[in-house]
Image (cartoon, rainbow, N blue to C red; front, side, top):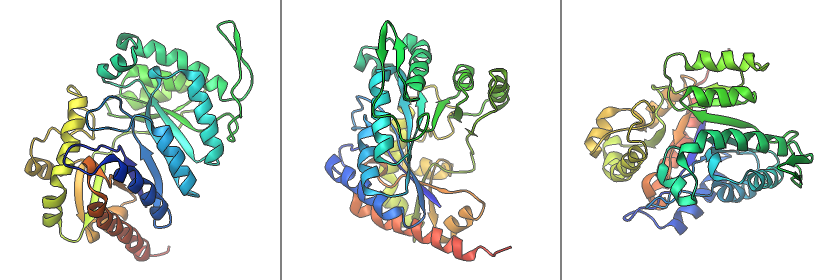
Length: 329
């Protein structure tokens, strides 16, 4: 199986945003019948390369063109949202998608984005706690008393209690935020003791630990599948490097984040053999047979769709071959 991640970067030298957004929708519609299990949409604001700022809009387009593909928004920067409006958007999208959209909420890590919205970056943790409590209450579908007024989100979500929500982060504060509400946790790093803290905090608040995902450093997060790896690095390298350099610039102190590369050239990025990886079909099959999925970033760095499609087709081919080679017990 494989996932499709889209951040919709459209830097100079890449494809225009109009082509990239159209291709993302077409790719999801095509891929859900060929082994894709989820589309993952990220969020950033005010980025010079046009990084996707409103994933809920793209998620709506994907939901309208697909029938069973899961859609994950990761991560929504909660302190930047009005929780009432966000609850309404989540509820309507839950109806449109028949419950296929889930969310990972975080506090973000770029002060520039808080300045973009006129929100105090220093208060992001407190704002996240306040807004999360209200958001979860609103998604239950009933009337809520808040600051002297009554608020009710209509229509109610199709999913009872609202769609699945997890918390993202790499700090004890993020763990406690998830545990307090009995939510799952998506770790961006795996410092010692974080998993144990999450489990203990969940139980302290009367919840069994929810789904928790911690980085697997053996699993790349931006995968392409090619017939010829050398040729693919020549073609894809500049786009992958743009993504790597820009993502690293977002986190100047984020050396512990598993998906971050500090490579400064295509050669360095390839030599790392880390988050950014190009497999042959056979290598992809072997990877899949370990029980891992292929985390594809098909339009990485503004990669033109005409170049991206052959790599997506090779990934689907690898998934089909891996399924054929599984010997029943």
